[in-house]
Structures are given as structure tokens and as C-alpha cells.
Image (cartoon, rainbow, N blue to C red):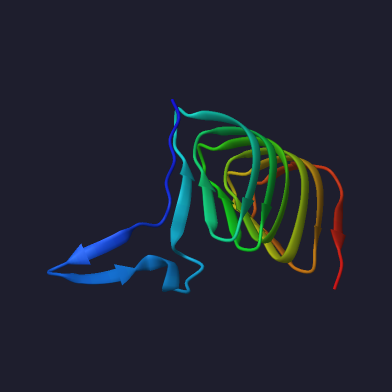
Length: 130
């Protein structure tokens, strides 16, 4: 299955609200849904959440989230990266990486700050560069 989600223009009583103007790192505007498999390259300036499977390359000026059911085999370069699912590849984060206890990672991480919860399965190298 193929899905594409982008920010939309909402209309309420003749007033329009452009969600693109909302500046929040918590607004997820792009999804790869569960039971969806995608292969390719993304260049984004908005938040991407992966709950399905992705193979390829991701470059983002925002946040990339791999949910607990997500699987990614790719290289990610982003401002903030959060992993709760399975990840294989290389990560370069400009700001921060958080790996939740459900995370399973094989690969290398380069970031100025990292938080790894207890229970993470990790095989790779971590470089903390300020």
C-alpha cells in the first residue's frame, strides 16, 4: 500500500488555518503507516514518522521518528531523531538522538547529544560531537 500525507489547509466556518505556519516539533506531517513498505529517498523540512517499513535515505531539517512498530534500513540525516523500533544504518543528528527502550539498532550514530533508555539493543559505534 502507498500512502502520502502532507499538511493540509483546514477550513472552519470560512476561516482558513494554514498548518504550515505552525512551528512545533510535535506536529507530524508525513507518515509511513503500519503495514506499508516504501523504498526511496526523502528530503523533508517537516516531521516524518515511520510505523511501517522503509528502505533508502532520509534527509530532514526537522525530526524523524521511528515508532515501536517501525522498521528502517537506511541512512538518516536530521535535526532530531527518535527511535522506538528497528533501525539499521547510519545516523547523523544535528541536535539530538533519543532511543527508547523498545529500540533495536545496528549502525553508527553521530550526534552532539544522545539519550538511550535502559533495555535498548544496540550494535554499532556512537560519536558524540559538539
